[in-house]
Structures are given as C-alpha cells and as structure tokens.
Length: 421
Image (cartoon, rainbow, N blue to C red; front, side, top):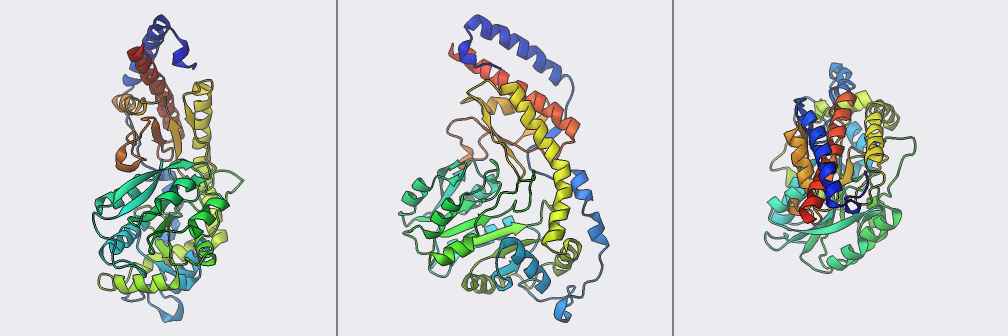
C-alpha cells in the first residue's frame, strides 16, 4: 500500500471501489470474532487444568489453608511472589485473584486516608500521570475516584521523563501508572535510566506513588528476554523507599478469573496496608495460593510453564507482524510496535482513521478495543491508535481478522483522503 497522498482523485476513487468490493466480501462471511481484550485462549487455559487436582491444603508451620487467618498470605506463596517481584517475603502480600482490585483498593485508600507521608489525597484535588498509550483500566480507576488524568507520551524506553519531572512539581500530582515490562499495549520495556529517574525525581507531593504493574514479567515471546530494574531497590537507594507499590498476578499464567495476585512495597507500607485491610478482609483464598505454588513450584517451574504459553502465542504475533509488513510496509503514515513479550501490539493508522477502522471491522464481525481506549478519557489526540489483542482467536481465525483489519485501515485512509481532496 502506498501513501494515499500520492494518488490523484481518480486513482483514489478507483482504489476506493476496489477496497469496498473486497470489504463487502468480508461482510458476507458473517464473522464473529472478538479481539477486544487480552484474554487467553482455550488452549492456554487447558495448560493449567492439572493444578485443580491438587488437594493438599496443609501449609508450612501447620497452617491450614482452608481456615481463617494469615491475611498476608501463605508463607510459601509470599516467597514465590517475592522471587517473582524481586522483593523480600516480608515486603510482599499475597492477595486474591485480581491485581487490578488491589490497585483500586490502594488508590481508594490514598484518596480516603493517605499513606505514610500524607493524610489523604482528596477528591477533586488530585491528578494522576497516565503514560499513553496505556492500560485503559488503570485510567478508569483514577477517573472513577475523581482524579484528573494527565497524559504523558510513551516512548520506546518508557514515559517521557522530561515531562514527568516537570509535572511532579505540582503538589496536586499524586502518582503515575506504570507497566514497566512489555507494556500494555506497546510492548515496551522501561530503560534503566527511566527507572532511576522515576525513583530519584523530586516531587512536590511527599507521598507521591508509583503504581508499578508488572503484569507481564514472565510473558516472553522470543528467546531474548527483556529485563527491567527493580523499582523498590532503586527507590530505596534514592531515599524514597515508600514511593513504589508493586503489583503482579498469575492471571494470564493460569486462569484469569481464578488466579493469585500479589502486592509488594516497603515494610512500612506493607504494615500500613495490612492494618487498613483488616477491617474488610480476614484472609484471601489460601487454598488457591497453595494450589498455584505447588503446581508452578518456583521460578524455574514458572518459566517452563510460560514456554508452553509462548508456543501458542508467538506464532500469532509473528503472523500479525508479517501481515502488517506486507500490507503497510511502504506507507509512512502507518506504523506498529514489534513486542518481544506481553499481550498486545499497538497499531497506528493515518491520523483520524482509527475510529473508522474499528467501525468497519465491527460491521464485518470483528470486535476490536475501541479506538482511543488506551488514552486518558478515551481520547487519542491523533485519532490513530488501535490496540491489537492477538491471544483469544485461533490462528486461522486471527489470520482472517487481521486481513480484514488491514483492509479496513486502507479503506478508512482512502475515505479520509477522498473527503479532503
């Protein structure tokens, strides 16, 4: 596909007719495919079914996982997640099935009561930094709690730190969302320099928080594994050990609706968080914690399990990237990310064409994440970003869906060029 700008009106009209005919052929296929979220496919879910046969629920120190108590999580589960996050067990809480739920609880706690160095951020007075494209559900938490969302552009090495360091001079800026490894949706990994600047930067708000969602820590797609510096260690070196809150879960490792999540932070923060969880939580599902630890065992066992996921996912990503290259390779207005891990690909259409592309796909039976969803308030300034979630469809279904997507991008771009001609 060549740039639409290089065509005259007659050529654009001819191209439009050709693309429209091809598009109508897709409509006639009656497709019903969902690529709106990063859901593991059935084949991935089947990998963890043997875990459900584990029925020994007596843990270390005689702790019966079937009973009340042990709010901080089973000791063996705390060690497992501490190894995963690069923290100490006493800096790690093992929670329920959802890390997003814990992020909400921490944001709500900060708004209502504050953390160690504050007395509550206050509704209508707080702002949160949102690197974008980013995770829409992160942004939704802050928006729901009444915070103002501030867009920070994402680069290949992480958020625009020059802008971040300027914005945090405002005492109303309380925190930042971060997906530091194989980010959602670009697949970028934060550089060492970015992590160190986040850890050491001077902030007007003494209780500024980094919400560090390490959701894709072990979700590799190739032999070369990207790594990210330990944010808690770096903050500790800089004298800001209470700044980060680290989150992770096994949602895309085992079962998204029934996995285990963990939260790590400084010892002071962990004690504070435990004290504020106690009025609402006696204990989380310790039986599920034991099942997961006994099935995955340790970091080697986890890595071996994730290789099985990679064998399913990597061909899907490779196919999409190849099709994008074949369809758009010569077009300077279209670009896409090439992640080495994670669950998503970012596709950038010509400016103003993303929403029409998503609409065309929907009318032909392929559901995508809404255009602009990866930006604060769902508003992409360029109208060009689409989050691609390859995991759920089968490889053959995905191939059909991506062919439609490429066609829809071309058709939307030609329609725009004709409207402007």
